[in-house]
Length: 436
Image (cartoon, rainbow, N blue to C red):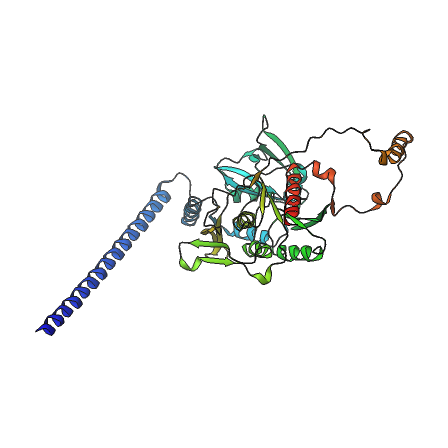
């Protein structure tokens, strides 16, 4: 009898589970049917609007034109970085990917609805003309940028080498909009610069994260390893670039743990990147320079190194672009650029619309010093008076120091003109002393 009760209870449990399972399947089917009905109703509404517009609009428009306009509006309303790429846009994107084109040499983005300079690329026409990170482009050749998309703006600014373009910009601290005249040039950017600073400090500047960055950083570190006591990594005005290069740079300095993670709607878009001890090249003290022009990949590098407590960050808060875009072809000549995921730093914090706050906040500018030209020591007297005679005679005796090539050296005079870099040098020197 006891066994019969147990068996009866077992049958009841199975029956209950079957009922619940059957009920769940019915619910799932009902939800799927509702979704499909809603989808069909939405498509029907869309088709209805297309027919009405084509029938009654005052201008003659084709169905293809209406579809393109609809797709364009849909993608632009998703976020600031998603877009519908027409045949012309898609071709232009491929040209840009090749890494050489006629243009100004700036990276732009939408910040609070305004077309904003993320960073001028070093050595380009925009850089030489004086454009700065944070400048808002109000007009391009007298055409207002209000309501203009990034791709439309880039299309106007890019053009034949040697042709002029006029921008009207709004700059923080300026009393009125500033006119900037630029002549387009061929944009070829050197992504890694290496220089030396007195005291065994290696200065590494990355202008953008192209496919040669990790190789360039590795070469510079290995070449100067014997004399390097500390490193300054300058990511100011770096608009970003390739994720694998950013990960590779972090891996150069960090030997274990999460570097960055990527999370999207689809599980197959979720990725976690980790550091490897075999890739670590140096453990010397590290200071990273950032500012409002540091975006995307440069924020991943600076933020990850900050989370790992591997570097001290100096400068200003970064731009705040922590999203992942991919280009997905929809035909042989057209594509969509879609945001599919967001980046997260090792601590779990996001970069998107937040940015990375430096450990030591320093505004840009020069170091103001009062210099007494005649303040000398006994040991300097002879040499100093010799220089005074040269001032009178108008002659300058060439020394070995003058003949020495200083293009790879950052002098004390250069540091006085860049207070952020000067602060970074002082901090890395302190870290060197602490480390012993």
